Amino acid sequence: MLKNIIPEKVESIHMIAICGTGMGALALMLKDLGFTVTGSDLKVYPPMSDFLTDRGIDIAEGFNPDHLSYGPDLVIVGNAVSKDNPEVVGVGEMGLPFCSMPQALNRFVAAEKKQILITGTHGKTTTSAIVAWILDCAGLDETFFIGGILVNFNSNYRLGRGDYIVIEGDEYDTAFFDKGPKFMHYNPYAAILTSVEFDHADIFRDKDHVLQVFTEFAAGLKNDSTLFAFDGDGNVEKVAASAGCKVIEYGSSKGSGWCLDSIDLKPPWSRFEVLKDGDRYGRFETLLVGEHNLLNALSAIAVADLLDIPREIVKQALATFRGVRRRQEVRGVKNGIVVMDDFAHHPTAVRETIKAVKPFYPDGRLIAVFEPRTNTSMRDVFQDVYPGCFDEADLICIRKPPLLKKIPEGQRFSSKKLVQDLKQQGKDALYFENTDLIIDFLKKKAVPGDAILVMSNGGFDKIHERLLEAL
Image 1 (spheres, rainbow, N blue to C red):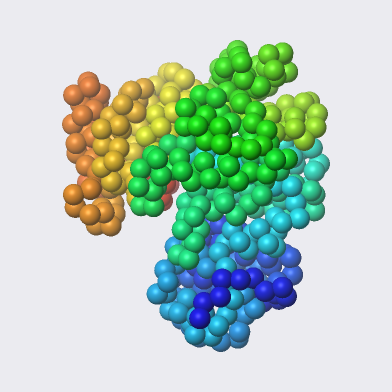
Image 2 (image 1 turned 90 degrees about the vertical axis):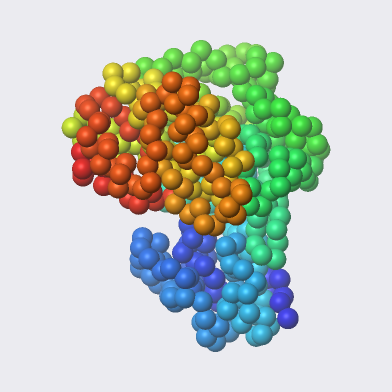
């Protein structure tokens, strides 16, 4: 019989699907805390596999009940693992205690710390990274657990001894035995809510379903928590209204507690003023691009003020923040052509990323390369929305979704239709069956001064490296 509990005494832990970004980071944290950690995964490959084994964590290839034969005190089950996984079946047959990744993080790492939780459809990773870097610059020896590699740390986790932990609060489901969002497992001292939109069509029915889970989260915040809510999103306003704690708005409204003002773009710097309760708080500069990222920075500034971090330290942190990999990350420049990588896949993220990047490359074309790859972007739910997201791109390359067989036939996104719609709007757009054709095309068409912005949540067949080599 399955036992979703964490025993009082735990010394050895086995992790099913250990090579995921979050699971791998948690494995390393647990190892650093002194636990004996083993793991298994269906596809064991670098760099995560090397990273784990180099730290003394044994990883088994494939899923087999024999991997549990040593009788671990606890089994942590990744959220991509199904109930009929051979090791999950073995857990039940052996009567081993098991839990989810956020349960384990909360119990072993976060429970005794003041939790700073960043939630929302967009901007979670970057905002979490900014907050973590500010805390680090302030010497607070923070812990963090974030869904992207922070360039300043070359890591997506840190195990500090200070009072605070920064957690990226994912709304995706927790595990096969817990279909609620991961962020419901935490008890934040402060939380940021950046945005609320429909996404993750594989687990959410519609926008109302998304609103429901975020509302449950806000309603569950304790009285002594503080929620920083973005003022430019009606859905955020609805969610924040259910919070029983103090709510502080941030954004572009002069009536909000924290306001972004006087933006000045002088590449590579973005400079901006910040108002607190209508009064000038300070002027900041950052290498981040786009108003959406400046709003992310604004929310981080607000949290820093709550923690009494001096604004001069905050200024220093923002000026030295080097970003997150795969978020507007320049992968290389070849013959005057920039190749940039970005995680954008939701229509809003695609639109805002293109809008943000365009002013920083005024002397050439912005070439947008888009691969619909997520369970949502490969569905037709945003078929009529995507055509309005590429307005500021000069040349648009759309790849056929690579994993369409996962989506029922009547629900599949059409890259061909997107290209047709873009052409009807007068845009220079092309459809490509595969990545090789995109590379061949850009090798001939890209010229010095151009910036190629590649957007996908996946590896995109290593297009960045291959493009740089071809150019």
